[in-house]
Length: 119
Image 1 (cartoon, rainbow, N blue to C red):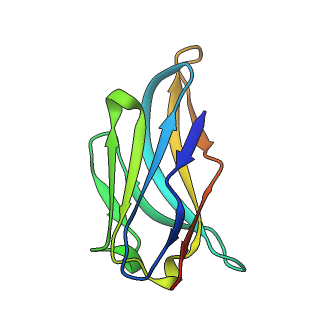
Image 2 (cartoon, rainbow, N blue to C red):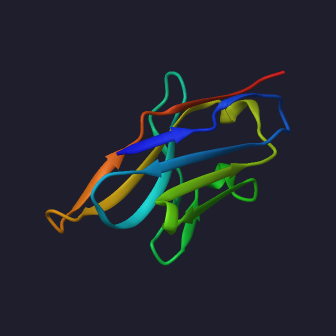
């Protein structure tokens, strides 16, 4: 249901843009978010965007990361600038999707995409 892409290896100070596209019998998508999990650490929320476009960010990424969405494409993006080695993690997208068949909301997760910040 969710396919993430855009990860890779980047030098400190560089940029990456992650994408996550939802597919299937989608009636609507409510909140969408990006989480990350570094080795040996718990998964943490990075950024979240509601269906109305309201956003919130982890303190560690404020001013550097921007979350956005394209509802016509059922896609959420994460623009990451001024990347630091501590941003290295597997990044997961998450979306709350209302299905056509049930008219109920379900939480879906993407498969994760690796982001490595290193010189």
